[in-house]
Structures are given as C-alpha cells and as structure tokens.
Image (cartoon, rainbow, N blue to C red):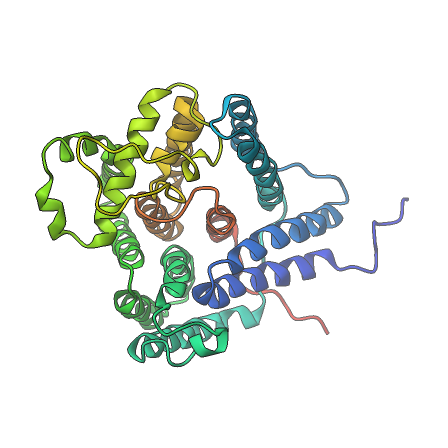
Length: 400
C-alpha cells in the first residue's frame, strides 16, 4: 500500500474551516472594504484546491463548465488584444485577468461538500455588528471609522462597494438561518443592511438588495413566474444602453432633473455605444473603455468630459471590448446560471435567485466587469450556494 499524501494534514478538517473563514471574512471585512473579497476568492481558491487534492489524493481539475467559461473568456481577451484600441493596455489586462480567473476556477474542483464548523453559526452576530457600525458611521458622516483610514469625512463613498457586495452575499446566509428556523435573525440581517444601504451616498446597494428581495419572495410564493421575471430583468438591463441614441436625439433637457450620477452614466453609455457601433463584431480590446475618447452627439455632455474608467454597464463593456462574442459569453453565463437555479430545492433556489438578481442589477450601473473583487464576488457566491445545495449536515465535530 502507498503512503497517503502529506499524512500529517487533516485536509477535510482544514478545508471546512478555511472555507468558513473565507466566507466569514467576505461578509464582515468585505462589507467595509470590498477589496477583501479579491483576497478571499484568490487565496481561498488556491488553498481549498490544494486541500481538495490532498483529500482526494489525486490532481483535480475544475468542473467542465468552469473550465469552459473561464477558458473562453481568456481566449477572447487574448484574441481581441491583437487589434485592440490600446494594444499594450489590453495585453497587460489580459495577463492580469489570467491571474484572477484561474484561482477562482479552482474553487470549483470536485470535492466533498463543506461541513461548517460550529463557530460558523455565530457569523450572523458579526454581520449584525458590522451593519450597526455602518449605520452609525453614516449617521455621524464618517466620524467613527473613516478617521482610522485617514480619509476625509466626505469620503463615505468608500463603503459603496462593500455594501453592494453584501447585497449579493447576504442571501445565502439568510438561507442558512431559515433552514435552522431563525427567521427573525434573517429578517434582522436584511433590515440592518437595508438601513445601512439607504443611508449610504450611492443607490446601487439598495437597488440590488431590493431586486434580491423581490426575486426571493417571487421564488418562494410564485415559483412558476421566476423564469419569466429573470429573463425580463436580464433583457431589460442588458439592452438598456440601446435607448441612449433616442434619449440624446433632442436637447434632452429632462435629464437635468435626474441625479448627476445618473446623468453621467447616461452620457457614458451614449458615447461608448457610439464607439461600439464602429466595430460591433470584434470589439476594441480588453480594458479599452478606460482610454477611448468621448464621442458626443450634436451637443456637448454635461459631465462626460474625458474618458471614463469603465462603462458602468457590464453587458455594454463586454460588447465594446470583446465584440459580439463577448456579449454572447456574458448572456450565456447569466442564462445558464438562471436555468440551473430553477432545478434546485426551494431554499437554495430562493437564495440563489436573490443573489443572481442582485448581481444583474449591479451589473447595469456599477463597477467594472474586470475588477478582481467583482469576479471574486461571483465565484464566492456560486461556491457558497452550491454548498447549500449539496450539504447534508451543517456542522462537523470539533477535533479533540
């Protein structure tokens, strides 16, 4: 008989605890600084993969669909770099994307379901404490935490990303609480996050949380309408930028009644849509959205005076940078996730639909698709939801 690989390591024990620590860190520190999710996703993916290989005593590969979508995205990024608007920038971003996608794919290597340690049940109290702390931070205009980070008090936007990510990750945690008949704790979690998100300067987090709540209730009460509602939300958000030429066809004076951030987004969508029309099939290369110049219509924009960091719309970004194939890649990924969720048991299905709807809502107004924390958010959320579907026991005996 052959000796086991690294016999001194209890791979299953440490895999359970590292997975729990990864999710706990994502939902606590991640609510304050969204970049914490990038560390959790990348470092957690590599660590859990190595432990899974030790546990199975063989070299594992990610699941076929993870390899297919991750590989297709990397190939598209590399191919479009040859004819990119800014080739050097596109090549650098393609290789950077490689270092993010590969570790995240490792989260989906076949392995035994996670058995959550007993301390993981106390995560809810840590999340509630963070929510109360953020509410106090907003009510004092940044007088509690921001001085520790050496930020000015008008930098409350520092919390926007973490709150938006929490609007996605909160649903699997609520599903675990509902499974254990802790309904009031689940409700307290959602209400605390709703208050903190509403007090924040940005509207992305409350919109995402509202979309998740609507889809969770719809899945629970009217499951037959879930597919129709999901398709409607996906198409509405994905095709929204196509209305920009009509909006800017006249003087668009009514836009001045919208918040400045909305006006700015509409202007970004308009000129990036015009650039996309110039090369609708092959795109302008990865990360080109940050360098292409403003192309205004017949009148100047109010806010879009220079290149934007990104389109604030991920379907538009995929089409602009990776062409039609990139847009189809994004739509196929969203549709396959939606289709798979429809076949899950009711509890993980409701949580999954809520997280899916929240991410779709965030994708049409906030962040860049290539942000490492955003990609990690998607991978961590899917990983946690799959564990909810597969697990049979929520605790593992403590080691003596």
